[in-house]
Image (cartoon, rainbow, N blue to C red; front, side, top):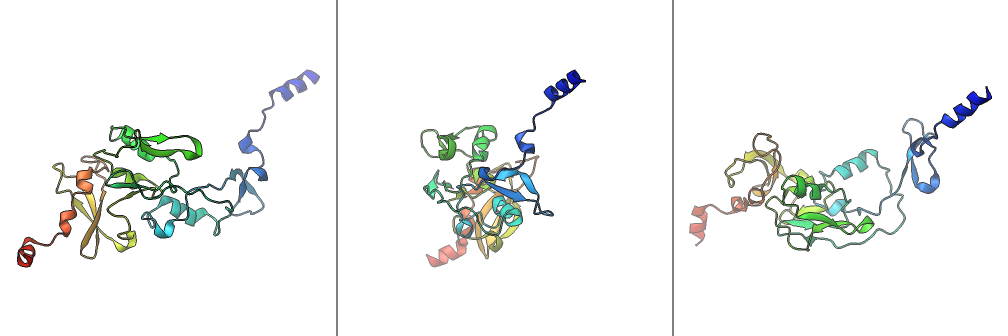
Length: 236
């Protein structure tokens, strides 16, 4: 009996950290929805980023991080430390603007250039909290598909230089259409505000363009806002 008891004690599994009670010194604890006295097993560590830029962010209204915070986050922030301040509106190219304060280092933009466009122009510089997406030699982001990183960025760190501060998503009227600039018939969404064309986003069609658009298509339709030829001749 003593041998059996000794073997049982030796074979007993040590509980993992995920199954052990949460500790206050590791951060703030979530509370269970139905039972406030029962804390969840994972600690919550308040991030230093992103900043509270929702009122001025172009991604506001269609931001997954904003939606999750509204649905599951607390009504007030418990972060009392000073947030970091990094360069804002840094131009990666003539089409893409980078806001380093909003970047959460998810790596979507880097993976897109490696796995989808295939040019591998973006990579992470530095490590840890200082990590940031950039080109290798700080040159312009010259990919022919650079505009797609604007759509896949979940927090508004990568925004369109042409769409910046021009409209809000709820101000836009969206219509499906086909690209008239590229020959493959890329499926796109046209966004209008009043009678003015504002921007283009990719529309999913697995047989043609999947969900991606070339820069020539995404940023090549500004001539839609030009006056008709008859009006130009009259003004001249």
